[in-house]
Amino acid sequence: MTSAPREDFAPPETGRYSRNALLARVGWAGQARWRASRVLVVGAGGLGSAALLYLAAAGVGRLGVVDGDAVELSNLQRQILHRTAGLGRRKAASAADSLAALNPLCRVETFDLRLDRDNVGDVVSGFEVVLDASDNFPTRFLLAEYCWQHQIPLVSAAATGWHGQLLVVRPGADNPCYRCLVPELPPAAAVPPASESGILGAVAGTLGCLQAVEALKLLLGLDSDLHRRLLAYDGLQGRFQTVNRVKRPDCPLCGPGK
Ligand SMILES: [Zn+2]
Image 1 (cartoon, rainbow, N blue to C red):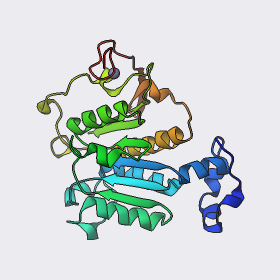
Image 2: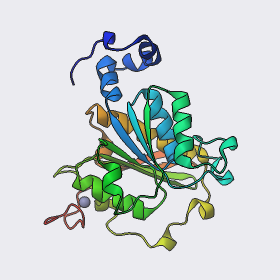
Image 3: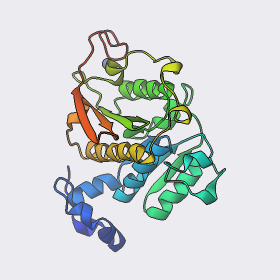
């Protein structure tokens, strides 16, 4: 990483980011890297709320927010980017306002849409790290495929009930991809939505915070166990576990001939 002296930052930034700059492996050089970086977060719900707030607070220079929904009353027990006064607003716009209020130095680009095969390239290109904070497997598969094929690191998380999972995919010949873990699309009936299974807001927020941590490390080029392991969180038991992820020889995305 190139060095960047404190003098490269104006007084509003030196005050705002002083605790980042004190961190081992960050310093003002790391802060400069974050300021110059572009991170896309797909989903401004329970996961994305926590991830986006912490990425903006940390000083990521440009954030993209993808969400095609409007704010509903049942969202507010977990989606802390949004406000009661904003019921009915588009989530992407609501998120952008909250992020600007937290850190006006962060530029926010909104995508008020649902990702699909036709628009994924236009939305994702130009971002250097992607956070999958969506709530459905078709979007997860779409992002996993696009990011792997275009060599974009992906931080994917999911949460339901009292449980959450997190993994980081760093494209590379020796690294496992998302579909090494989930080779085929699960049947919809096997994956009840939050409207059926319930979700504790703080569990989703925990996973969103972890996504922000991993994204900030990726931007600094720092390695992580989660590039090759899956992290599972059981909020009810108060337990974190990680399990090894291996490259699947017959993986439909990264296997031979792909
Ligand atoms: Zn794979």
